[in-house]
Image 1: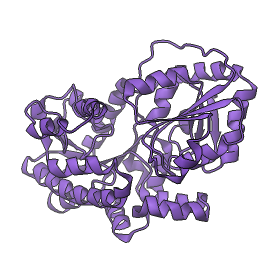
Image 2 (image 1 turned 180 degrees about the vertical axis):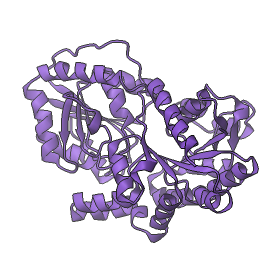
Image 3 (image 1 turned 90 degrees about the vertical axis):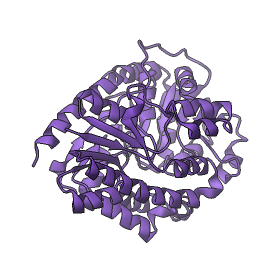
Image 4 (image 1 turned 60 degrees about the horizontal axis):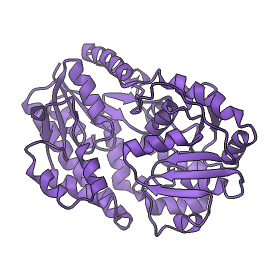
Amino acid sequence: MKVIVAHPGKQHSYRLATAVKKNGDLYKYITTIYNKDTSYIYKLMNCFLGSDNKERAKKRKCEYLDDNEVIQFNKCLGIIILFLVRIPIFNRLYNFANLIMANSFGKKVANYAIKHNVDMVIMYDTNAAKCFKILKSKAPNIKRVLDASIANRIYTKELYENILEEKYLKNMKEQDYFLWEKKYIKSYKDEIKYTEYVLCASDFVKDSYIYSGVDENKIFLLPYGTNFSCKEYFPRKIKDKVDFLFVGQFSLRKGITYLLKSIENIENANLHIVGFYDVNSNLYKKYSKNNNIKFYGQLLQNEVRDIMQKCDVYVFPSLCEGMSLSCLEAMSCGLPLIVTKNSGVSNLMNNNGFIINAGDDAEISNAMMKFISNRELINKLGEKSYKLSLNYTWLEYEKNLSNILGIIGENK
């Protein structure tokens, strides 16, 4: 088959493109920002970046793809979006720019796919509506596959309304208003309407697409692999305080509001938070004064791994997820987990931590206290985490994808 993998950003699309290439099916990988050896725009952009961002910029390149296998569209808009995402006051503009990108990028991908007579286009959720609509109309023979990185937004909206208190819903509308505005809802509904097949990393994501009307027979489970490869399990030393760790966006969706509230009155514990945060946010201003809470900001991947290996327990109270890569990475570093049913990893857990209900800070506190009052659980469950992580590798991901492509390819 001739398969195009397209993503205006990155996420795990390099892994997908690599897997498709190893299967002998990759025609082109299409994106916006990419570190090609001949890219003058990329070199110019690097002149304005700090050292950490330059290091991140280097990672916008896949070691398994040749430069001639990569096509770039909307490079300038991609750069603008890359900067907007790091400035909280431009949150609304960032989401609007993403919608413009999805439509423009999707149209170009569709036209390229038709021109080169490919067999399949794989795109990512929230970016595929325009592309798939054109393909269904002008080239219905080209299979349209959606790689769903998170539960779909139609399902998410109702989920939030069922979980969150009114005060948090108001805050959510201010942060992620696109869940409520008609133009975004229409785009997500169109995307589902024009999708033929869906790749889901977890049962939670799969359930969201079944809820939204997708035929279960058209949905394929494709769990991710861990980016950290720790060769053996190292038990933690018993300390005066238990070090809990969270890695992710400083946002309501990730459950940070409930996590911070849960540790307010807990003694003998530290909470380490890794991820971009807004110094002007009320949450940061309130909790940054706590001696047992440490904010690191955004770190490089090797720095995250170092912190994971020093902490004791990983906490991920997300309200809605796809399949948390950070949870897999924490497991591979030998950390037991405290996760919600909505984290995308609850279905793969097996006595290596505690599963809690989303949006319940009391449950988070109770789970934390179990590790504080019974320190032996840290190593007992941490070793189980490590052993479970060995089942989730990118090699296994590649094998699973190969089987799925074979099934889709045979379908008429």
